[in-house]
Image (cartoon, rainbow, N blue to C red):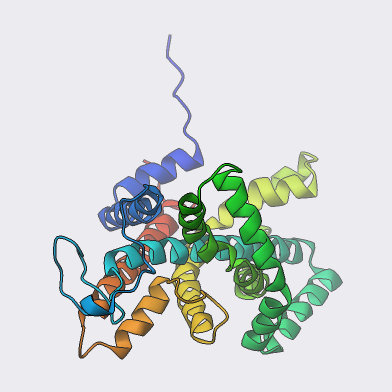
Amino acid sequence: MTSAEKGSSLWLDAWLRLRRNRASMVGLVFLFLIGAICVILPSIPDFLQDPNKTDLLHRNLGSSGEHWFGTDHLGRDLFSRVMFGGRVSIAVGLITTFVAVTIGVVWGAVAGYVGGRMDAFMMRVVDILYALPFLVIIILLSKILEPYTDELTVWAVDLIAGKSATAKQLNDTRTWVEPLSTLVPVFVAIGALSWLTVSRIVRAQVQSVASLDFVEAARSLGLGHLRILFRHILPNSLGPIIVYTTLTIPGVMMFEATLSFLGLGVKAPNSSWGVLIQEGANFMLTNPMQLLFPSIFFSVTLFSLNFLGDGLRDALDPKAAKD
């Protein structure tokens, strides 16, 4: 009596292939470590110094036991600013990219699967949005939504700190919450207009996969269009989507830095990696550490995302040989 061979899922096969890609696994480890320290360390009470506290008597100091990364041009602890800024940059990259990719995948998948006049109409909408001045639209959306951020900040601080919180607890909670709550208009604005490219990528992939034999077999079995599209076609189109997603995150981080420079992103004295790099570039001759440390964190994150995206593309390729 022969025993039946145990089946293996697409995701298990993809994970096994990804584990053999050393560059991708190194990138995944670095992403996990950077994300963990940027989220956990600012959450530990009194572990980090106040990232916005200025001390003009101790500005532009080098690395020491008190200031691990030294201080910036205003005497603020650079290690604390890099940790708090990393949390903001990671949140901007992840949340905004998630919004953009979700909209783009649904829009492009429907357009590519339905085809005909609906496809033509939906793609013309994309062309029209491409023609609009991207930066101007984001500025307008940010300004329209900005009045609601103060109310959101107060609500979030009260919710997290509680009614019986002391003044110090409220201030610490506001330091943690305010940089993220003030960026909600940026999340919405960038995410609502960054899906155009991914929609075209998904549309092309769906049109290519929809003509394959297994899709015709699914139709012959009487499966519904939504199930065929989201259960059979999209999983076989994940490679380019994943790669584009990993490349979008650092681009969004840099765009957030541009908006912050224009006064529409992170509000002073709060920081993000983009803001820190921009400030460091202005003082690179007098205090190169102010540019070096945030640049290292941002560059490592960028390379890690690229390596991970390349590995995921190979791992999720349905044409890859099954071991």
